Amino acid sequence: LIEWLNSAEVQKVRLETGAAFPTRKGVTSDKLEPLANERAGFYGRIGGTAVLDNVLAPEICIPINIGLQEIGLGLATPAEVAKNVQDAYNRRAKK
Image (cartoon, rainbow, N blue to C red; front, side):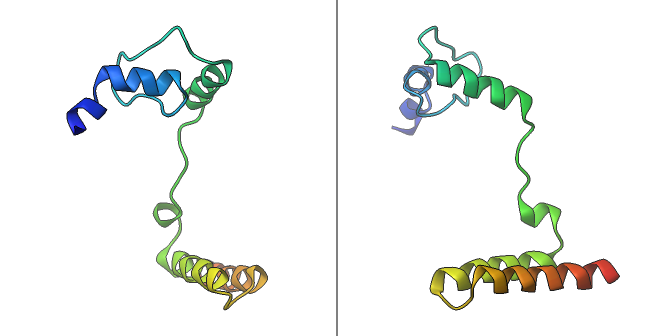
């Protein structure tokens, strides 16, 4: 099943329906919707999105991760979390 789901045939269908861009090289189609063509161009211009954990120090990421959970649980407001993250950033910047 996994081999079939990763086949060029299935990836072409997923490309044509807008479900996903192929991970295999050489999978193309002439039946793309205009939005799919625009999406392909976008991916060609954008190098990617950084994961915060790879860009920010742990002293900053930990308050972000905890704060997002606290917001979801109703234990903190976005403003409170933003203040905690800013404070963590400021402490880190002073090092």
